[in-house]
Image (cartoon, rainbow, N blue to C red; front, top):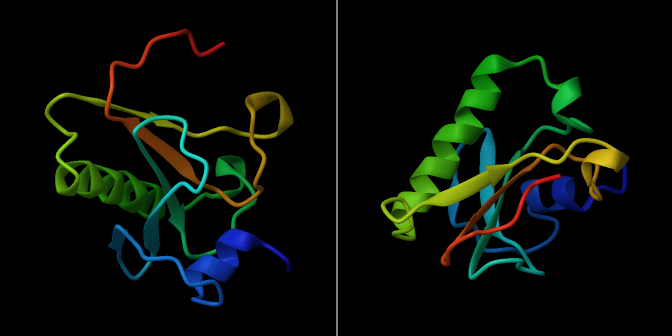
Length: 111
């Protein structure tokens, strides 16, 4: 499989994690859309959230996102969490991941 997020999760691509657990890794987005733009992903490959039936893993992703928000001190002012799913949902990398966006007032409608 030629999945960049799998390569990051298995350390085949060297990226410094913001947060890392046994099951989840949080990294800075290389093309940020906000002053703080993180990617929260499971280490196991799931093409999208539709493929992941593991409620504990999805909860672990949320916990890692919250821990990262606290670590970067954006938790009190606020942040946005987004999971894009499939083509029309805006997903461009087909490995389940969540975007954490923060660092300025986020405006605009999602849709």
